[in-house]
Every structure is written in C-alpha cells, then in structure tokens.
Image (cartoon, rainbow, N blue to C red):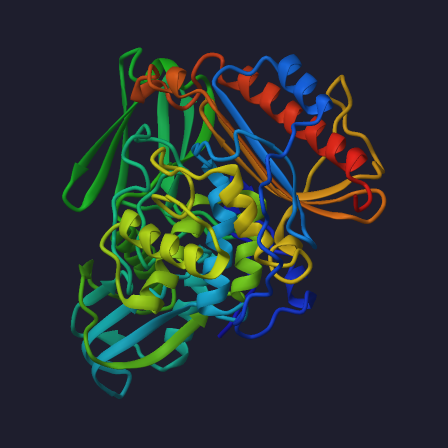
Length: 498
C-alpha cells in the first residue's frame, strides 16, 4: 500500500508531488556535468566589497560564484576557507540519495508474521519492521493496522517485536543540543511523527493537566513511553532522564502559563512506534503484547506493508522544510545501500564525502552528518560551487530548491525581481549559509555558495542556551540581507556572458 502523506513538521508538512513531473529518471545514474569551475585570481567586484563592509557581520564571510555553463569563477571572497555549512549540507545529501537510491525509490514499513496462521490465530511473533521511511505518521500506522486486520488475524499468541530497520539507531542527531529540542530527535530505521511526541498542558483549578500523545490527522493516541511531570522550580525549564524503557521529562511550573503545547523529541523510536501501533491494532480488535525492540530482524513472511512517497517528493519536502531527521535517515539509507550499515552519522557522512569527491569533483568536503545540525561539518565556498556545478541546474537539484526572496533596503520582499534564484539555506547559532543557482536578467545561469560564521561567539554559548542565544537573530538577519544583496549584485553584473 502506497500513500502520500502530510505529516506534522511544526506546521503540517505538505508534499505537493511537483517533483513527479520534473523529468527524474528512475535511477539518477550518470550525473550530468558542467566544466569544473576554475579560479584564476578572481578580483572581487567593488560592489561586493562595499556590501560586505556595510553588512557589519562579525566572524568570517566567504563566497564564490561561477558561470554554470563554462565553469568560470566570476567572483570569490576567501573561497577556500572552510566553514560550517549548517543545513546547506542537505543539498549534497539530496544528490547523494538520488544518485544512490534513485528518484522513484520508496521506503517500505512491514508487518511480518513469524509463525503459522490458522483460523485467525498467529501462533508466533508479530514484527513491525521499519524500512527507513522518514515521513511515517500515526495515520500511516493506522492504515497499517487496518491492513493487519484485513489479513484475518484476530489473535497473536507470541510476542510483539519492533525491528527498527537496517540503519544504526542513535539517541539524537547532535548530543551538543539541549535535550528538549524537537528538531534533534533519535535516529533509527523507524520514525513516527519525525520521532517527536506532542506535549500539551492546561491549567485547571490551579493544577496542570498534561498529555503526551502521538497525534496526526484524526488520531491522538496517548503514549506511555514518554512521560511528563510538572515541578515547582524556575529553572531549568525542562529536564530529561533516560529510564530504560521510557523517556522521563519534567517541566518547570513557572514556564507554563495558562495552556500551551510543543513537540518534544523521542529517544526510543522503536518503543514509541510499537506502543502506538499496538493501540491502533487494539482499536481493530487485535490485542498485542507490550512491544520489545530487536536489533536483528526475525525470520517470517510479510503479511502487510505500506510504502512511502517517492524519494524525489521526500527530498523536495526535506529541502523546503529543512527537516534534520529526514536528511539523516535518507543519508543513512543511501550509505547502507552503498556499503552496508554505518555505525554513526560521522561514518555515514564520511562515505558521502568520498562520493562527493568522486562524483561531484569536490576537493575537501568534510561533512560530519547529513543534516548539518552538528557543528563539526566544514566546507568551503569553492567546494560547494564545484559540487553544485556538477549537476546541471535544470536536471536534478534546482527543481527541488526553494525560490529565494530578494529584499529591498528595508527588508521587504521585491516582487517580480528580474534576478531569479533557487537555493538551500543553512542556519545555526551565528552560522548562516546559502547555496544554489541564479538566473540573471539576460538568461545567464550562475552557481553560488555563501557561508558566514562567528566561531568565537559560538564557543561561548553554553549548551542550555543554544536554543535562542542572545544576539543570534540580529546577526543572522544581517547575514541573510548580505546574501540577498550579493545575489542581486551578481545578477546585475553578470547578466550576460563576458
């Protein structure tokens, strides 16, 4: 059973399916290449220098721009200085997954029966087997539970086992982030609601009623694997404890107000998905035992399944909403397909680095994960342009990227600007990046990369303050304004071949 879902991603993540008509081949073999960009002592245009000086951005600022057709570098500023790329990493991850798995690849989540089925009774174990689908939500599990019912099974005498899938299971993407951030959940081959649980609170007669559920669409099953307690304190706002089979959270009463809600990360994705599936199976008259996670996949036969949307649609949504878990899961799945399971994100990213050197002509890519959430990744503007030049803009990547809004001096969007750009953004605390493609008014196609970072300030931010550190928003706004100004400047200056 295939489906096209709209799982929740802060707001409901909506897949348009537009990539289906973009001419992707079933397998993206033989990447179309342009001539490698060549840097020949490129002078920085006076306009770019004035914009940089006026921007007043602390730390390092680097960029490079090249002609997409000839590969000639047209402008560069410190192009060999490698900085943290943040979510710009996802552009390379998308190409890595497309080249390895193919645009039409679908991830499959299965129900496996390990035992004989007779008269509606399974005399053995039932297995929920993850298949690296990063967009599975509770509505999808409900569809899978209905499929199970349609097999005629009414009773399972054995255990209920969850196999988290063919990739490594990790408690978080970046251990350096605060525990409560929903964009830094556990990673495994099974994910439900982006491995996040919905925490909601409401004050009633002076006390707080709290719920933890796995809501999606019309479904809101309560969960026990993640539990919340309200505590009388001012700080910290949240605490987390790993208690074997549960995620134990506390929250400061003083931080709650009258009512509210937020998504918290799940650290036990197999148990989370298993508990929710058992609830949904019970609503179909099938009672399962408490889920147990198995690292190995028990033998048996598949009796029900659901499939994801095509990879091209998944990647388009990943790039639009910059979802970290999706990037890590598709990156790990690509590595698993190329050489087997990687034991860490760094090991999988190292395989992607090798691929980027071989297939994209990048010289020294140093990605440490597939999402850019971790701070250890480094890439230069020159290398990013090399990578993006290796794929003609109209063939693979550009149709998946978001249009860049160009801004006037007051920060207002300029509608119908003659310069058109599509790019991937990247933002961490005091890190800002943008890389992609520009169409100048004369029709000339450009490839560019821009990175900025103030590592000095980043080093002073304690772990608990990394969600919203002081000054980060203002710094990022200045960097984004410079990005847009440079794009408009390049479009005007390089509007036709020189």
